[in-house]
Image: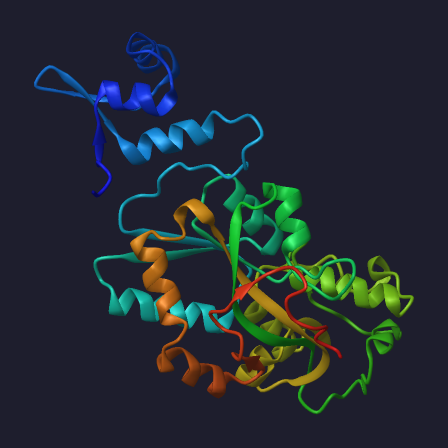
Length: 310
C-alpha cells in the first residue's frame, strides 16, 4: 500500500509516539506543519518529516527552506562550460529557470549550507592535494549533508600574453622584477591554488605587482592580460583558448557539483543532472579545450579517484 500524502492527527501521534493531545501543542507552540480542511487537521507527510529532521540538535546544518517553484539556484565557482550548460537548461526546459551566483567555491559551499542554493560548484583542493571539496564541505556544512557529483576535470594554470614576451616558464618566474599580474578573488578555488603554488615557489604573493587587484571570474583576468594591463593571471586553459592567450599549465583539477541531499531528487535538480550525459554538453567541452568529462555525472566519494598528477 502506498504511503499517505497527508496524515491525520492520529497518524502523526503514532509517527511521533505521543498522545493526540500533544499534537495540538506541537502545532501551536513548535510549528508542526498542519492545515485544517472541513474541520479536520491534515499534516503533509513530507513537511512533518522535514520538521522532525529540523528538530534534531545534531542534524546536518543545511537549511531545508524551499526554493521558489521551478527555480534552480547554483552558486560557487565560475566555469565557461557550466555557463553553457545553464543556457542549455533554460532553452530546453522553459518551465524552469536556472540561475547562477558567481561567488567563488568557498562562498558557494557556505551558500549551500545556508539553504540559499540547491547546487554549489566547487574545486577546492584539500591539504593532502589528492582530493577535493570534502574537507571544506564538512567544515562549512557538517558531515553527510550533500551528494558530490563530478562535473568535469579541467586544466588550471597561468594565462600569459600571446607569444609569452616575458619568457615565463614556471610559477617561480612570476617573482621576476617588473611583472604585473591580475588575481582572482579570495575564496575562489583558483586563488587558493595560486597562493599554494606561490608558496611552493617561495614567493610572497603580497609583493607581486597586481596581487591585490582581484577579479570575479576567469574571463575578467583574461581581459587584463589580453589588453596588456597584466602579464600573467591564474585561470583555466579553456579561457586561454577562447581569448587567444598562451598558457602555463599547473595541474588538472576536479570540479564538482555539491548537492544538498534533501533536494537531490527535486525535478529541476534531476533535469540538470540528466543534461550532464548529453552530447550537447560534451561537444562544447571539446571545442573549448582543457576539459576532461570522463567522470562527468559520476558520484564522488572521498579519495574515490587517484591523484590528478600521478
